[in-house]
Image (cartoon, rainbow, N blue to C red; front, side, top):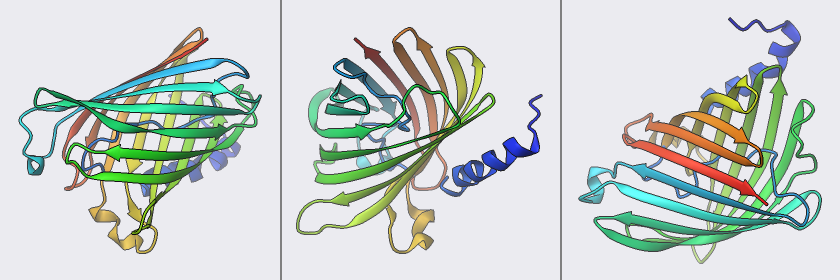
Length: 250
């Protein structure tokens, strides 16, 4: 049994509220990750590999599940920022495809995991040619808000996406993560993702993709791993998703 004092609960309650309020993906994104306060060290490289396997919706008329991969290279350009490039790949119906990628910049003023509050921001430009052949280029701005209280870690990413082109529009894609520290290097908890909520008209949220995950985070030396099992929580996302992320620094 975990017992919180009143002061700790006062800090935790707003994050729990955000977690459930923003509690849809029609198809799983290439990146299923809540960004925290960790980046590549200054003048050092970091590599990240992410894979996920999900059940394609019946409306996509695919004969197989969809296997997606993301490869990222990051480099610490200053003590507080990292530049990154990503490549997206997929395999379904026995066909492998390159589905685009992104360039990104992440700013984290304090990334040593010490202290209670953690914050930062990430800017990125994505190009995606999805499995339904639709193409999209968009800019994403992600604030990173974190809180560490006793054995609990809370992270919230209130991301805003803006499509680039003639029909530019903005959408809100918040995500959140709650972890409990089991042992040094092992955390368990949950992640929650809501995709493409209209910036105007939050009454439409019931129709947007939302997915919840049970996750385990493991850190070993300079490496970190994230395992997750997810499920859509509304009628527009009825798919199971399995994901694995491995991060390595040199």
